[in-house]
Image (tube, rainbow, N blue to C red; front, side):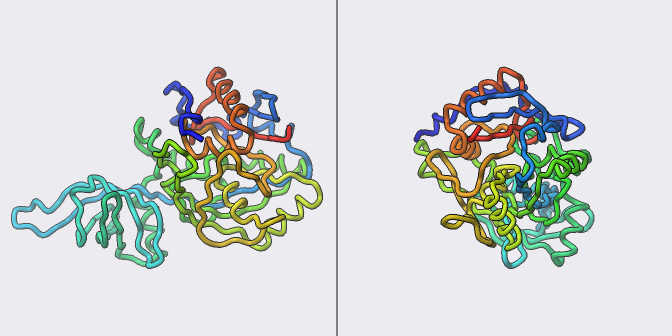
Length: 350
């Protein structure tokens, strides 16, 4: 299975840099088996049945992009230099792994001063990352990040514009609860309170799980044989109650439909032989064509990058040829792509 099997041409003007408003006004391409239908997210009740269960990732994106100054003691005052960090994951000891820019200006022991009095020390450095030890407790750190940080927009948006105040709301789901993600579960960004109420009235059930999305979600696949690719690990949890609810839905004939690839990857990680079990820990599950889904019956997701692991995942669910046709249709119909873009509802069973 070659990387080139998952390539397609995408006009740059189809990459969305802002979401539509209201959230549920986004367009939605519905793929039911081989059938494609143009719709909108607000019309989900036309395809979801009473008794279906949507799986929601309740992770909360932290303002993980920080600008500051590297400070060293030097006689000529040259010890100060502007630096930028994107936090990529918390470590067990309370420090954070981060991408540093420019990396060459950093070395172990450097003091970093951020806005609002937040400070840190470079505890370690390797060829691509640094470890930052912040000079505050965890609870205070969350408040400090809220004050000093910016939302970590994906590279394809950050290359076009800087984060601003609107992204604080736009790049966060309305059910975000547990802080720890450095990228949003973007399919969930299409849901607003009105849509949730409509779905509940329609008989749709909801289950929340947690997967803290890491910056590795944007890493490119660098091997031609995609089966040899190694996924980044992300921390997640499926509680006993969540596992029971999912099992019950399947037992009575309802469909389990994750909202986003992160929720899908987590519940498939939690799936045991013949069912699903509670799960807490890291997962690096890689889903590509040939994978046999255990608990997933459909998926709500955005449109993904060419040659990405997420495009491989949806191809595993629907089939490569079906997804090739769906994406060709989406490009021709001028759907908006990626994190702030439009949605798709994938139902492999029709």
